[in-house]
Every structure is written in C-alpha cells, then in structure tokens.
Length: 180
Image (tube, rainbow, N blue to C red; front, side, top):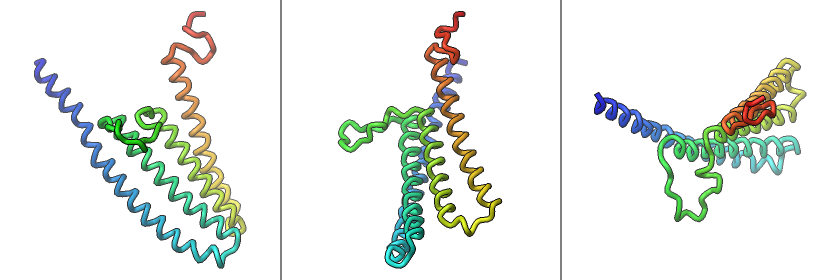
C-alpha cells in the first residue's frame, strides 16, 4: 500500500510539468503582443505629425497599454514557472531581475491586480480623452468597472496583510500572540 501511495505522490508532484506548455504558450502570446505593438507603433508615427495633442496622448497610452500587458505576461511566466514548476538556474545571468526567486504567490497576485488596475486606468484615461463621444451610462460603466478593479486590489492587499499577520503570529487587533 505504501508503494502505491509513493507512486501516486510522485505522479502528482511531477504533474506540475503539465504547466510548462501553458507558460510556453504565454511566451508565444508575448510574441503576438510584439506584433500588436509594432502595428500600433507604425500607425502612431504619422499621427504624431498630423494628429491633435489628444490623439498623440491616446496613441502613447495605447503603446503603454500593450507594454504593460507584455510586462504582466512576463511576470506571470517567470514567477509562475518558478513557483509552480521548477527553479530557474540564474547564477550566471548578470541581467537576472532582482525580484525573481523572491516573488511568491501572494506577491504574484498583487502584481497581477496592480497591473490590471493600471491597464484599466489607462483605458479610462483614453476614454476621458474623448469624453464627448461617450454617454453618461457608458462613462459610468467605465468608471464603475475601473473602481471594481481598484476595490478588488485593495481587498486583496488587506486579505494578504491579514493572512501574513496571522501566519507571523500577529492578529489584526494588535494582541500579538492572541493572548488577551
């Protein structure tokens, strides 16, 4: 019976490698984002010379939007692979990001929600640049969706803080070890 248990545990542990193709797929998605960025960039260049200031700002925000999404995908790929599949050997990599190897699931989740809030904020700013083309209902929805992301981010941060405090032996009421 013990050998069956050990075999099952080995199969379950090695199943983490099933995630590797997902991360490779995200790397390919980053390549597609590069194509999207190039398309946005080359359509933006003539706009710099012919468009209004607002159009140029929206063009730049569109480029930033694609870059932020690519950054988010990279964070998910590297941190997710390190957290769930295998350590990346980086001793000889001089350009290795300092955050790598130190980003746990909670930090990954906060980076994710932070990026989503920033992307949503950029989309909201782009909408405000052409606010005259939006109805009050459309504007309300955009602000409401953005605020939902902001509140979700704050709630995630609060939950992580509470979890960290409990894990370190501190409770949220300042009682330290829980003795009253």
